[in-house]
Length: 129
Image 1 (cartoon, helix red, strand yellow):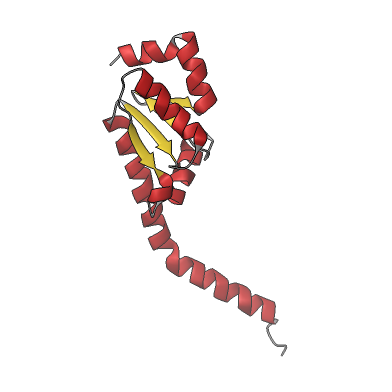
Image 2: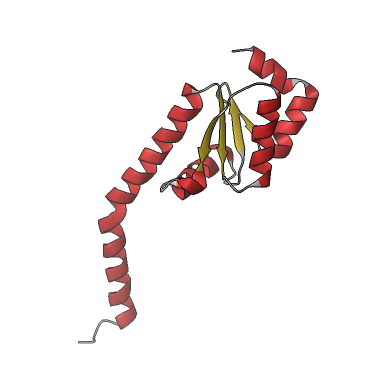
């Protein structure tokens, strides 16, 4: 009888440890997902941001110039910020910031927001509420 190769034993150990943490990881992911969905659909304007990001500051400034008050989620100031970024990746295909939503509709990042403002699309979305 041969011995089980050590890499198989190591693989089984890694899989066991991964699976033992799976419920906690799923719970954390579900909680971040629920948070994101709740924020997007409970607020007229939402910006997922990082406090030090110049593109995020630009997005916030644009709404300030429009006399609008967005709900801002500063991901770098939250313990679950990176989980929220992965939820955004699943939701909109990007994990970069800012990510802007108006009336539940994804606008995009800073350049997308500026383009929507220039084209009148942003004004129409804001008026629709």
